[in-house]
Length: 285
Image 1 (cartoon, one colour):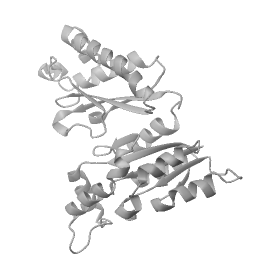
Image 2 (cartoon, rainbow, N blue to C red; image 1 turned 90 degrees about the vertical axis):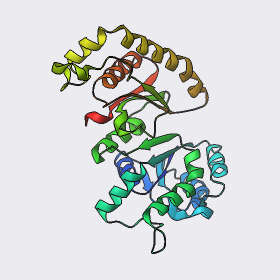
Image 3 (tube, one colour; image 1 turned 45 degrees about the horizontal axis):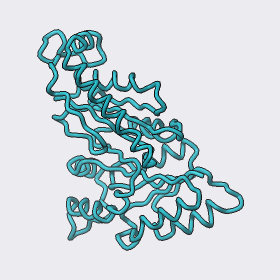
Image 4 (cartoon, rainbow, N blue to C red; image 1 turned 120 degrees about the vertical axis):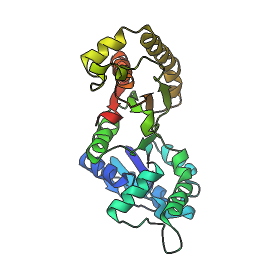
């Protein structure tokens, strides 16, 4: 039986995740009080009918801090019942959350006449800290659209082979911020930059001209081999720790040339291994 607990900051995309999981065949419940989590598992998921073999539950800050006390203990108890349980934690940069609230004109669930939006966001993160610490998958939606997030959830959750570790390679631009959900970050800014070659400037790492340019530079190959060695050495440790998902982020200045090229060849190198490979170029959308 599969149980996904979806939590995270308000306006970070939890509703989109639950809607997507529902489309994928999950029975979804939003804002279940965490105090009722073990009751739901015992009386519904483990009932004789076994109707809900794939369930997703949304837990957010409306539980308040008292509702999330001993969350880790509850999670441990659930996993002892032979239920495959994973935590998905959604997050985004504070400036992005503020902008989303401004655009939608929604009120933060913890804000009121005395608590401003920024303070409410900080309080929410503190309330959910016990959930965040248990997260198996962290997703940063700061620069992710509605359709991109749906595709991400389908690839990471619904389409993956659960026997294997899901390994996501993601390119990004440092000028736009480091992905908050990255487990490992590698910096490609020391490599020759195609941006300074006039006929390559408007291209990206998917284009043959950029590929040919970077393939001709020995430093690029050296960095690629170093990253491969690191992943090959340390990925087994994550598997041994029962991790189901790992994100490797490759960054350059704008996320258009060097990081895209490196991310592509890394994903291609590992795609025949016993891993679920996910490829994403954050700045190309």
